[in-house]
Amino acid sequence: MDSLEVNKAIAAVLVAGIAYMAATIISDGLVNPTELKKSAIQVEVPTTAAEGPAKAPETPLPVLLASADEKAGESYAHKVCAACHTFGEGQPAGVGPNLYGVLGAPHGHMAGYDYSSALKDKKGPWTYDALNEWLTKPSAYAPGTKMTFAGISSAKERANVIAYLRTLSKSPEPLPAVPASAPAAAPAAAPAAAAAAAPAAPPIGPMIAAAQPAEGEKLVQKYCAVCHSFNKGGKPVVGPNLWGVVGAPHGHEAGFDYSAGLKAKQGPWTYDELNEWLTNPAKYAPGTRMAFPGLRKETERAAVIAYLRTLSDNPEPLPAK
Ligand code: HEC
Ligand code: HEC
Image: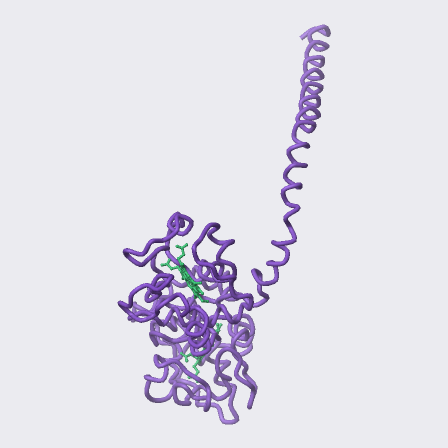
């Protein structure tokens, strides 16, 4: 390559560079006005801002639902929503559609009811999140809806109402899993079910005997402490206090409102039963209110149970190694 060609090459690079810079400057010039338009649209912010706190409650919906009061939701619905809705199976529509079985059903779920196109255009089933958004402000969720109802501003009240709607079914949907456990445990839900289905897994007893309670305590702080307290005489949170649970009867805390699924279980919490429960609570006690997908790893369950065992003045003997 002679020097002239080198110069040409350098020039070409420079020209390309300048062209690129020019293009950037021009497109910046072109893009800015649109950006201005965008922010002009966002001047509507006050409404969204006002909705902000209601739309983003501090407590995530699954946690609220896990502790929701169906009875309070029922009386709210029968006072407020009943002006327009019926709730019993097979009842006719009022001003609004009958709501039996609405959770998990497609939007516009009542055959023959004349829904607005705003609602008919919504795809997919009524999930917990969708119902929560809808009941926050129907006109924001489905602009043009016929449901002339302002919305429920309290996240807790909405959770109560949704928990009540959930009961309007022969086989209520499972409660959503709590996000605190989601990152680690949610992908584990399927394998956990598989593990529970395979009784060939090594027995948990020796693993509990070999486990470190301190490891279990760390896991418990991470996964369970959102809903449980562990100290002697501690107050229930979303779930019961767990002091002394190993070896105690199922539903061991007097006065705690356990689900029928858990109350139906007889006898004490053995190591094996705790292991099965913590593998997949919804499978062990269908209808349970413990919205936790389960711990996939047997070693983790063993450590957690070894820790739970220590929560006693008089711990149960360890299983044989
Ligand atoms: C003023 C009357 C009115 C009140 C009050 C009202 N709704 Fe509605 N609701 C309607 C109407 C009308 C529709 C149909 C909306 C459409 O087609 O856009 C509807 C639709 C719904 C749907 C969708 C049903 C489906 O099949 O997709 C749900 C869920 C719902 N309402 C729940 C509630 C709850 C819960 C309350 C009380 C907190 C409530 N509504 C209060 C009139 C009302
Ligand atoms: C989202 C809240 C939540 C999380 C997270 C949670 N639990 Fe629970 N737990 C509950 C609720 C609610 C109950 C009562 C269940 C029922 O009545 O069906 C319960 C019940 C129990 C029971 C039965 C207690 C008794 O008295 O019979 C045990 C044991 C238990 N949980 C252990 C754990 C452990 C260990 C973890 C963590 C690995 C955990 N839970 C995570 C909410 C939770």
